[in-house]
Amino acid sequence: MITPALLRIGELLQSGDIELDAERLAMVITRRILATIYRYVLGASDPAHQRVLERLDESVQTLAQQLAVREHAVG
Image 1 (cartoon, rainbow, N blue to C red):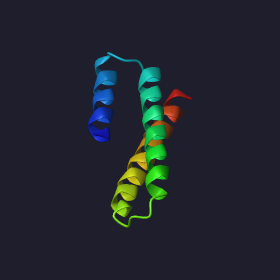
Image 2 (tube, rainbow, N blue to C red; image 1 turned 45 degrees about the horizontal axis):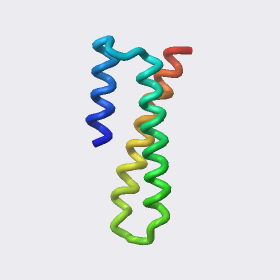
Image 3 (cartoon, rainbow, N blue to C red; image 1 turned 90 degrees about the vertical axis):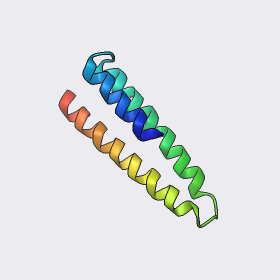
Image 4 (tube, rainbow, N blue to C red; image 1 turned 90 degrees about the horizontal axis):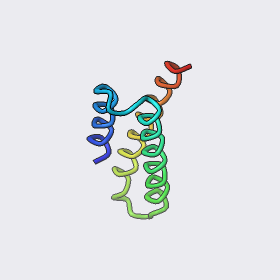
């Protein structure tokens, strides 16, 4: 569900329906939510949570990279 939402945010930015600041804020909020979920799942002892942790980690890293690119572009 996160990936389609992020793609939609990108579409809104490209179409001019939201500004760069709003897109960045949405990405920051999403990264925080993913990090919170990651910490919650990490605290669980069920080995089945490993795949969830991997997916969350990938998503957080992708968001961090996208934010870094935007921060660099904005200056």
